[in-house]
Image (tube, rainbow, N blue to C red; front, top):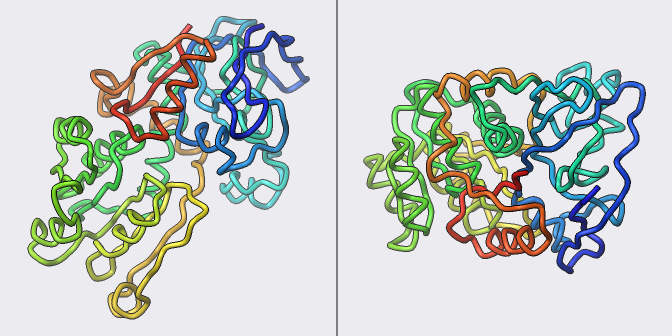
Length: 333
């Protein structure tokens, strides 16, 4: 089968012909119809985040059909044991033997993938494969971030970064009853998209976003801030944007540090900084239902499709590294 693979960090992905993956006793073989290209894939290619083996097929946002039955499915990207204390407590992303597809085992930039049956979810007919794929990371991680941040109805939210995660976060927050959602970005195209979904745009290139948020919240700040970019600057801004008892949930990846003023920014307002890692299988059914009923819209202006070709995939990854106009790019076949 055809696959687009990472051979060496710091180098472009390469197309290779490899064998169709073997199917274990508890696995299913899926013919891939759509695979999302995530910012994490750009981190793996650059070596910012490390894969556990090379060469490896990247891609952890996957939707397709079960080869044996033809059922439409999407894939939870964590393969876990189901037995350890973390799995039993519903925090399977910390499973002692966890493997992430596209990082620890071959992923979705290919024609087929073999995954544990317990990681497979039925994809309703109302959801196109391309949308089903990105639900499995960008939307699912946004939902997990909002859950971790304990967003409640009537609260205010600032979303730093209006990419694939940000577009979902805006819509999910509105569904959960957020009073106001502020979308912070420097890209006017993405800000316009967020505004279409009900967010109040904050153009960080036009002035200090913290000052803008203070003005928009009448000096109060926001109850919850989601940092979805992975830059020390925006992580610091997320913390600085908080109101009393506010929670900053950090999702973006970086190896760099950022400064916090402990007394004024955390202690004196009992603020919280919350780490967000992946998402949970238990959150996926709600997400699929929201997409099926149209409460989460990933259609117009959200997805651009490319073929399963190395040049096209590398170009999409370049765009992510440059924070370009694409919200989400999906390999479609």
